View 1 (cartoon, rainbow, N blue to C red):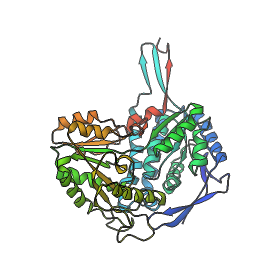
View 2 (cartoon, one colour):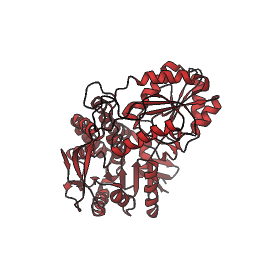
View 3 (cartoon, rainbow, N blue to C red):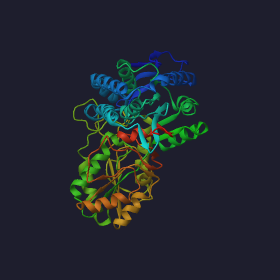
View 4 (cartoon, rainbow, N blue to C red):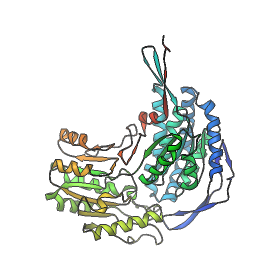
Length: 476
């Protein structure tokens, strides 16, 4: 059993102002794995005050000082990689190989990229006699999710440290163990007191108090579109910057000349990674109408290789859904797909055979003959569910892909690279992968429309954490 009974504020582990707590549930078996203290408004006030005081010095540190600090954080993170991976498996059910090979390394990756960007980043530019300075925005409130817990913590904290900001983090109340370890890393690395602060708790009251706090200069949030809208509305009274990475319902367009055997199989298995709990998952696969049966057969066969089960067991490549509420939502939406007339190719509702009882396991599910108006084609399911949708021609595929309130990610598959580039240019989305391109931690990460605003990762992440100051006559 893990016990998270203190917040990290002002460089110390401190007792909470209140007495509330909540159980943390292991999604692999539905059993309590630990407890977490619940913060309140007083805890947020204390953390923000510590961050505000620290900013008076940290905001004016040199590039060299921040590089040295990032190097120290990276070194401590490397020491705790195994601990981080184990915590992520326990808190959100990632298979142990996936936690060790993807989740834990993602945090290290963002820290390393931020350090590399900082080495050469231009914090000013000159226009004649005017110098435009790029200065840290100040105190940043951060709210992070449970699906990629340390990835989302690190991709916010790293650029904040690099640009000279101080921060208060509210991690997911569903998956807080990785945040505890990350905070231990920050402490061991010698991060100055008050630069990094952690308050455990739920959206109400902690997230609400943080986003509305007059001494918080910026909110950086990752979560559902509904949550992002609530944060933005609450932040409006204090006119603070709000950077959001929210939901997605991304389209994977397979043009008629694509290598279907390869592209369909890779696309179907890709949706199942992380048990479908990835905002950029390509959950809408668009294929020509006359290739529907072919695509369905390939996808169904491909997902048969996906083995749901105990995340600690060897050979498991898909763990449980991270929490009971999300599990019930996914099960309900699979049934809605059947009820609305989509053709079930693989999976379906119910508990997968052989998975531990009590855990939040879902069958890898593929639907074919999905129409763009169906619920499963429009709502972000956030589970291992693929919808295959037919289209008439290239223009129709682009129209269907863009017919969504979301615009986070997308993909195009074609043997004609120039054709794929043209289609990618027409997609209204923050990211497009051509022919299975690999991810890139230096590329801007974020979306259009209700998928959010601002960008994370790499040099582009620095922009949100900086204010511009025009110093006229500086170069006279």
